Length: 92
Image (cartoon, rainbow, N blue to C red; front, top):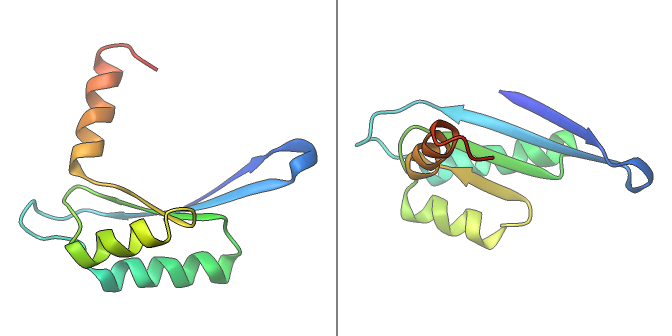
């Protein structure tokens, strides 16, 4: 959904792919979505692929992200809630 590129000067560029999945709290993001993100990250030559969901990830999806933590990441419901609390509190 989002391709973000940051110029790191002499170190080159950092490219991240962000994929959003809006789901109900009882509907978790599965391993197939994470595999698709991993393939898309590779296809686009991105350094990192990040799944963002209003729900949570299945155990298999979390294991894959942990295994490839330098290439994949996640922002789940708890992470989003924490971001919102920090913003409302005026933290950076």
